[in-house]
Each structure stands twice: as C-alpha cells, then as structure tokens.
Amino acid sequence: MSKQQKSEIMVKRFSKGFVWAHAVNAISFFALYITALPMYTEWFDWLYPVLGGPEGARLLHRIFAVAFLTPTFIWLIMDPKGLLNWGKELVTWKKRDLEFFTEFVKELFGFKFKHVRQTFFNAGEKINSIIQIFTAILIIGSGFPMWFPHLFPKGLVQWAYVGHNVGFGLAIAVVVGHIYLSVIHKHSRPGYTGVLTGKVPAWWAKSHYADWYDEEVKKGNFPDLDKTNKKKGA
Picture 1 (cartoon, one colour):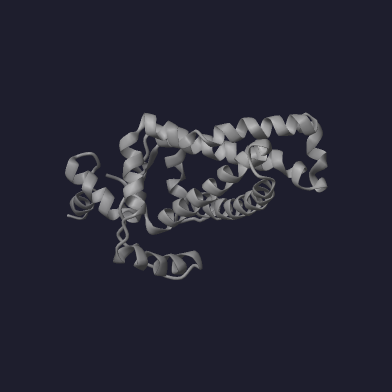
Picture 2: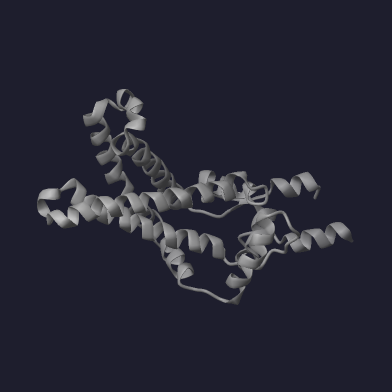
C-alpha cells in the first residue's frame, strides 16, 4: 500500500445524527449571535436593514432560539447510543486525560510532543463539551425570562439579561478556540471532515484516538494500520 493510498483510507467517526446535530447547533448559534448584535449595541445598527429591521431581527432571533434547543433531541432520536457514549465519556476521567493537557500545550505552541492514547473523545474535547453545556444552559435558562418577562419576577428578568450576555460571551470565546483547533491548527485539521461527512482519515484517527481506534480494529470495523506498516516494511 502506497503512502497516498494509506492517506486516503477513511473511517467512520461520527453518525449522521451527530453530524446533523452539530450542524444545527453551529448554524443556530451563529445566527443567534448575529441577530443579537444590533439589539446589543448601536454599533451594529447597520445589520437591521439586512435582518428586516428591529422586528425582523427579534423574530429571527426567536426562530433560531427554538432551533438552538433541538440538537440534543436530533442526536437522541437519530443516534441514542452515540449520545449516551458522549455522556459517559464526559464523566470518565483517568490519568491519561490529565497527561493529555501537558502534551497539548507543547503541541499548541509548536514544541515536540507525543500523542497520549485517548478514547473516542480526548480530554480537550471533553472540557469543550462541558463548557458548552454550561453556557447553553445559561443562555437558554436566561432566554426564557427575557422572552416571556410577564411570567417572571422583574428582578429575575433583569438578572436574565446579565446571564444571557455572560453566557454568550463565554460561549463565543470557546467556539473561537474550538474553530481554531479543529479547522486551522495543522495537527487537528485533517479530522475536520468528521463533522461534515462523519468520516476522518484512518491514520489521523489512529494517532489521535489510539484506544478507540484499536477497539474498532478488534471489532473488525477499521483496518489494522500497524499490520499494514509491518507488511510494507518486511
């Protein structure tokens, strides 16, 4: 097997349920952010004509707010096993997860590093998920009093605006970091196809999620790249 053929081998990492849930989450999040900008500061009043004026912006914001609620349900309906596995991964922490961060810092700043064996989600992805869950709860939880102020105490509504701004501020910071590490950073970039098609290069999956990859090899789902390399070197 040539080097080119090896690089072209793709393996399934994410289900269609995850791909759709991720897409809806990303689109609705950025749509919420854009439609909220002119309502947050007059610096972005130039967006009002594009969004159909203040009323149009509020309507679009509410439409995408509803869409923002759906990704978990999409994943649950289309791939309950994958959602359950994600939940289990988030609460499972071992020594290797702590070691991951040491090597990740080296990788981030261009120093020599080693890949720490990881399962389906690495420690960085777990942290990202936990923060995203927290900010989503804060955004959604504060959004209801803002949308239906007549159903809540006035003081709670006022604090909801604060919580909403804090939640979106934290979320956008995490999203920017997530985009950089998944799309721009050279070591992670090859795996970006996972959120688009569900598939990633086999060599990349093997190097970044060795424990998960080896489990799939034992099940007969993935090619054994170690044996392929040995045969090639023989």
